[in-house]
Each structure stands twice: as C-alpha cells, then as structure tokens.
Image 1 (cartoon, rainbow, N blue to C red):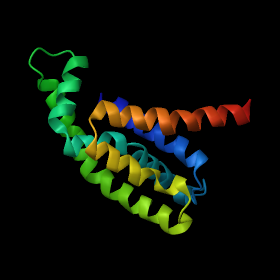
Image 2 (cartoon, one colour):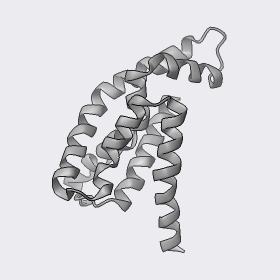
Image 3 (cartoon, rainbow, N blue to C red):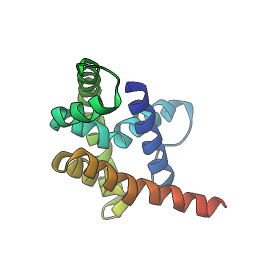
Length: 147
C-alpha cells in the first residue's frame, strides 16, 4: 500500500510538472529534486489526510487491506504520517516557489488548494475533487495534444 501511495504521488506530481510551468531541467543536478518535488506535491492528497485525518484514513484502509483487526491499516497510516512529515515541508517550499515565480497563474496555486481541501474535506471528497477536477483534466488535455 505504501508503494502504491508513493507511486501514485510521483505519478500525480509528474503529470502536474508536465502541465504546470516547472523550472526544473532534466539534467543530472536537478533530476533527483524533480522527482522529490513530484512525490511531495503530487502526494498532498495523500500526505495531508494522513496527518489531519488519520482515523478516517485507517477506516478506509481497513476496508481494502486484508486484516481482521485493522493493524495493517494502522501501520500504513503510521508510515504515511512519517512520509508526510518529510514530504509536506518539501511540498510547502515547492508550492511557495511556484507561487513566487508564477504569481496568479492558477496552476501555481493547485498545491495550496489541494492541501486545503485535503485538510478540510472528507478523504473521499478531497481525493475525488483532486482526481476529477485537476488530475484527470490534465491527463485528458495531454492526451488530446498528443493524439
């Protein structure tokens, strides 16, 4: 489950980097930072609920992780919180950087809005909002331009 969270966060972040104006070049010196930034920003929809809605996250994970007592779901939430404690500050720095560089470009504000919605709405609502209103529209726009 943690591997799925990490891969999903990276995927979401990389898709956003393709669409939003990012100032990372793909050379060796910034390649690592590009992927860490993607992991941090793309995972806000996961990391924020892990910190502010852990019992709700555990309840949802208990439904999909096979375990009779929910202990595995509790472990996933705990590991997600540890990751969040590392990745949320990085996401915050990257979000401030985007807003500073791109001002009122709406793409620059998506991480802040994502974090706010993830902190204030139930997990299924915040994830659906992020996935349907932002991530899917990016993917479809990218497909349209490629096809």
